[in-house]
Amino acid sequence: MKVKKFYFLLMLCLISIISGSNCYAGSFTSLDLINNAKEYDNKTVSYKGEVIGDVMIRGDHAWLHVYDGIIAIGIWAPKTMIDDIHYAGGYHKKGDMVEVSGVFHRSCLEHGGDLDIHASEIKKITSGSLVTQPISGKKVYIGTVSLILVLLFYALKKFTGASAKAIFPN
Image 1 (cartoon, rainbow, N blue to C red):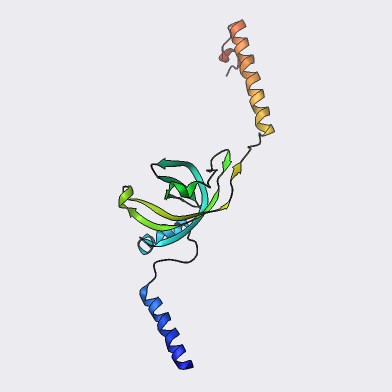
Image 2: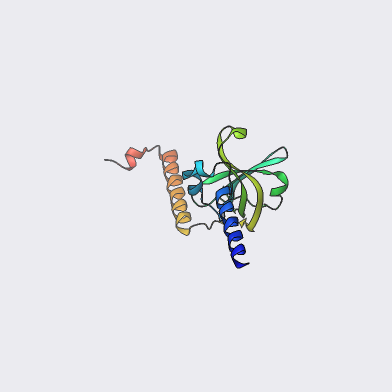
């Protein structure tokens, strides 16, 4: 009986190895996908990163770009999948972090030969947020001094008719 179970499990393992499942476990980086594009072409992959730029609605689908810290990859998804995405990263925003599962295309015929992922699932990992950029005191000081100098030179020229060469001789 134990021998039959062993052979059954061995056959099951061999069949799963030989069948060459086209779903890869784990998440890939953009470099993994780009450097091994032939291997992953038309395979289901998982890719994590920040939604950046603009989410572009195209009929019942949408384009979004997901940046993993190296390169952004275009994601083509049904519009209903992006309902939970509220922030796309930019200068004043940190984008939502997502994990995308879908079919990777190294040269998608549907989209003009571009590299993309056709999403079958998008999971939001963390929500994005607004980002405030602090104003540097040093930059404010330099800007104020520069403005005062420009106004001073303008007034000097306007009221005395002096040129910059008269003020700063060689």
